[in-house]
Image (cartoon, rainbow, N blue to C red; front, side, top):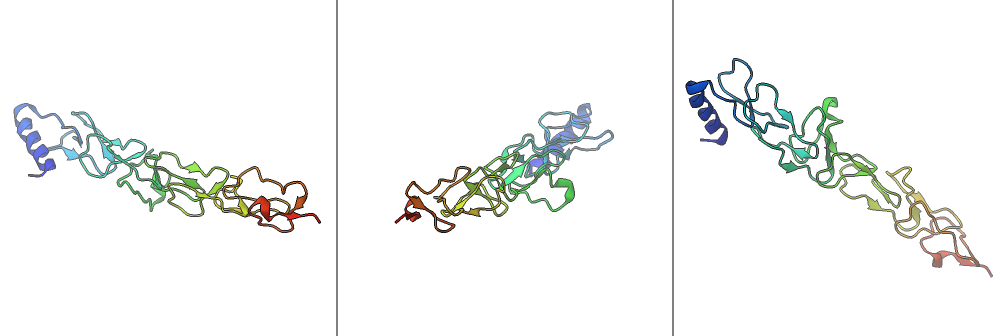
Length: 194
């Protein structure tokens, strides 16, 4: 006997005695002959539910039916706001407009750690050119990532140098040197005046 069947049998036996109380993890609309387990993306913690089950808690996925709690955190690289629709998988992909604000792959220009509710934009010095990142990429040497466009990096301007992870503050070539080209990676790339 599966867990759900055991719950249904228990309810029906109890129903014969005293009308039955809807078990946790289920919903029992008026006139129901037996409880319906909460759907994927939902749960219900208490007994006696006569309405809809609760949407899975933000940051979590409800991956099986008949749940009494949100226990599965959404994986890194995904977000689970669960405002109108609950995530049904710990790696939820939304393919309909109705759920796009609720859960899905972490968007370009953002990063999503484990159990993310709201995707976080990449900070200066990092970038995210693809969906589904748990951590933003570090800005490569010879480039800067100012946070204004967190989906890309820009070539270091002439007269400056950009070590790995350069963000808002771009260092100028040291006194007595100049940047003869763009994309310099370190102070030693700057040319000394003769």
